[in-house]
Amino acid sequence: MTALLDHIKHQIRANGPMRIDDYMATCLLHPKHGYYTTRDPLGAQGDFITAPEISQMFGELIGLSLAQTWVDQGSPDRFTLAELGPGRGTLMADILRATKGVAGFADAAHLVLVEASPTLRDIQRTTLEGVSVTWADRTDALPDQPLYLVANEFFDALPIRQFVRSGRGWRERQVGLQDDTLVFGLGPVLPQPSLADRIEDTQDGDLVEDCAQIAPLLHPIATRIATHGGAALIMDYGDWRTLGDTFQALRAHQQIDPLASPGDCDLTAHVDFEKLALAAAPARYSRVTPQGVFLERLGITQRAQSLAGSLRDGALEAHIAAHRRLTHPSEMGNLFKVMGLFPPTQTPPPGLEP
Ligand code: SAH
Image (cartoon, rainbow, N blue to C red; front, side, top):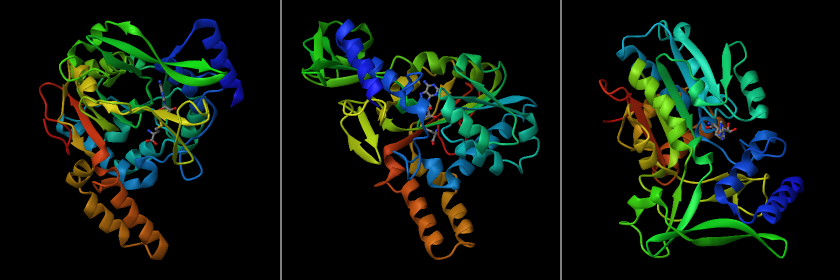
């Protein structure tokens, strides 16, 4: 992807070192050469694999949690069923299949997919053939009505900035050029009012990350849920208040240098769930729950046993491995977390606690 590398070098020569959020946004979503813009990155042949691509059980249980929430909230007769960053559309297809038996749910749902990549929109259209779908670029375009929303491995793709503590100020980590090669460097010491709350829990030299897009993205979702009803289930890897460098690049399932191959590898950072919680008002947020615990509470073991009945040999082994991969603490069970948003007067979706 030399065209994108040339573009980034040109930008740096013209404007000086580039912030990491600008570098990430350019690499992932450049309209012509961006990583997501130009390809389907998922699956065994791709660069990474996600929970819905590992097993249908993931989307089925999430669908049932959302549908139960819809029933508990009085089955509103018109609502938005939305997903942020739907990838191949697999999670939404599993949600729709699993909720077919919930009377009235599909008829009341208006499907909206928030997706930036034209290539992935095409794949989603194929996966969800026969279903009426609207695509949106932004969450403020979501209709003003009850909203049931999922986002899996979406927030980790949002551009972050990185800051290294220096006294009571911060030096921003940036991408510069040395001998025509991209390198990380540090900007001057500056105050950062948005990091005021990180002065107590950091020391000189510590690195913290900030994601400015979380609040404007989540606010329209939280207002719709608080005003009209609904819920959101957000799954991602990360934790409450992250500390240290979590900026990473994946190509062909291997971790590589995030500056080595702009536009040709996935770039992510851990999600700071505290930032999601801070942006959740006027909705309420649930406790951050490990994915393994969440799926166990929703009955993944029973579902796995029932599916296993019709499988033999290699298919059975793959199914058992997928169950383990989604839930085991040493695989995705602990690294991935779930947070729910729900109306102030209601309880969180099944699987989560207030
Ligand atoms: N949720 C899917 C895919 C995760 S990959 C799964 O679990 O398999 C991240 C997804 O978010 C891709 O579909 C990507 O194109 C989309 N995406 C990344 N940044 C985005 C943005 N700013 N706005 C909308 N979609 C975005």
